[in-house]
Image 1: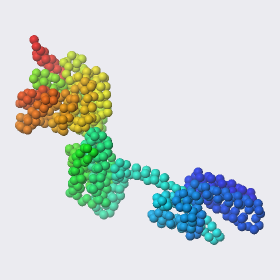
Image 2 (image 1 turned 120 degrees about the vertical axis):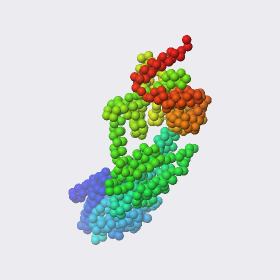
Image 3 (image 1 turned 90 degrees about the horizontal axis):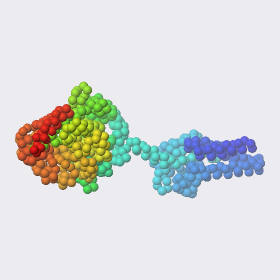
Image 4 (image 1 turned 180 degrees about the vertical axis):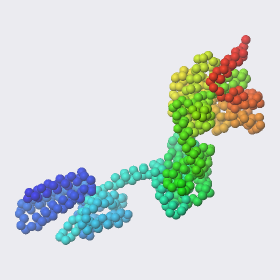
Length: 619
């Protein structure tokens, strides 16, 4: 009797403990229950058992029944043929069937098709006397899938009759969570396309297979040209709409043997199997360009899109996915350097170019930290009086080894890499500081012009940043002129708002390189600007190309009608100057007067400027 008490107490502790431990440990509880159940049954069937022992047996049976019925996990007892002979309430809930519907039905009848074979193998193992745990799935009566973690143990139902007990925990939510985590790890959550990680894994598998077949494959990296401008001009919601449409169109370019992914931002990656040579790759590029020909509709806007593409074709040097992807990325960078809307196929010479780009980025970062930049200055002259009425600040890089470097050699890369923002901030601060210093020295005060990059113009709180620089340097806002390009005005609402804020500061604003980009005359008259600058490409040929001469004359006339000033840059000959004077251009800038020079040389010019001003004063 004492032993029975110990066993019963142990059983209660273990079974209740199973509610707090992992499911795979639950079979221990059942096994203990079965042992006790067998003891109790033997005591019940013994003709020599006392009435006291029988009463105690009924007590233990009641405990077992309660634990069975109220267990939160589904429990089923099966006969030798695998059919239900007893189930608890949790099993009814999980499966959706009543006891009467489940009784004498095989468990396997409810298992989903893809799990039947595995489940049958595990149940056969239990039938042979070996406890096991496994995962399976059943169909609920309503038709949806329920994932289960099953602990199965053999049991002696009757003498010489083997059965089994299955304890099933509903893990559907956990499985869905695992699948969601896996999806997030391998797929882009916006377009639904595979991501870079999935692309790389699948590419490695395909490379291994292609080696056995002797076929080549090609990796394409595709970047949407000026996608940032779409985001900046129309907003990120429109940018996302464009990406979704792009993803749909690009799926038309791949077969079941190819692969498409969105790797990051506006960058997509393809790999195409069975690409024999460059001609095959070029044909694939043509197919991609064809799906981009039709305009994209972003609600009320119609947008034409081009792409830059970098291509790497598999070879003995590119034996894995990482190498091929790196080569395609290098080729993409070269395509963008060559003017966008282009493609490049990787070759070994590009490696050195890529290394040089990396070196340039590192050197530029050092230049920013080490204050290696200097400013040159080019005077802007009133065409009537010859007086200096403005000065443009132009950056140069004083490289410790290569000397003075022109901005053409580093500004495009700085814009692409984002380094243009700290560089532009340095130029603004240095120019304002220098102009204030000239005024303190007593030179005639004139505005100093500074170019704003696209990234700077679209910065948050541009007004506050410029105001802070003016406050730091002590320069009066009227002596700062900010030059923006036409492309910055494509987002008309943002441009007008930003320009109004800048005008509130009291600074002057001009549009640089006018005529080379896109400008709507309807909106141009709404922009709060002071001056248009005619691009040097038109001025250069006004004496030999009648079209350029007509364009320049028209811009000048239009600018006067808008009550704006106009300045022509790139003036290098007297004939050009005469033509501009005859057409009533206000100001000129170029080598005819002075190339960009140091601050010291500008000071001597400003001294002469004072003499010119004095000579023009009325007596």
